[in-house]
Image (cartoon, rainbow, N blue to C red; front, top):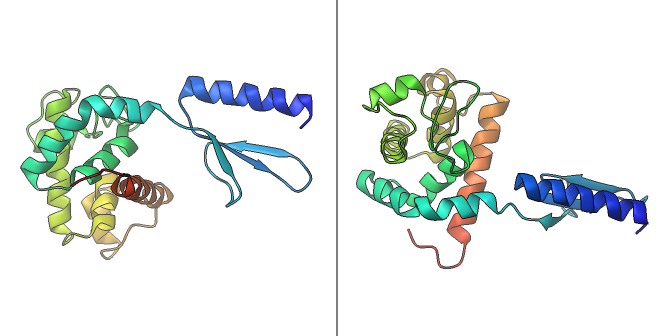
Amino acid sequence: MATRNRLALLAFALCAQAAHADVYLEVQKNGTLLLSDRPLSASARRIQADRSSAARRLPRDAQIRRAAERHGVDPLLVHAVVRAESGYDPNAVSRKGAAGLMQLMPETARRYGVTNRFDPAANLDAGVRYLRDLLRVFDGNVALALAAYNAGEQSVLRAGGRVPDYRETAEYVRRVRMYYRGLAEAPGQRR
């Protein structure tokens, strides 16, 4: 590998490490290196793993497990939602105004009696109750419950009981299900 390519690879990996991101490397047939935060093809190799969410997840594990068990929701599904929504950051705020670990919108927080959306325990409790209610509304269909969590119940109902045709929502459902599968397949996981 040319020195210039090695330097570029090193610089990208250092930036990704500072940003706590996954880095994937693919070498094209002509020798060009492609670096990305997601695999662009089956031949891509992960060269830098995102350590941030795993490290932040550990202190929240007991809180998530308690809230999930209290409301009858799979704790691994709750972990997957929290990772997708906030990356385990209790101070996360979206550009649309959602806040906290489970990214509660102000209306959802009021609906579930939360006065401080940044309080991790209250945010988790309300978010898990909301997820439980969505799972009930959509007869246990996880994809539809996740779509409703992202786009709203009415969006799923207007779409005829399907995942709405919104790119963001489809990507959200895919990402949460991928996280969920990864957690469920991890050695030593129990539900």
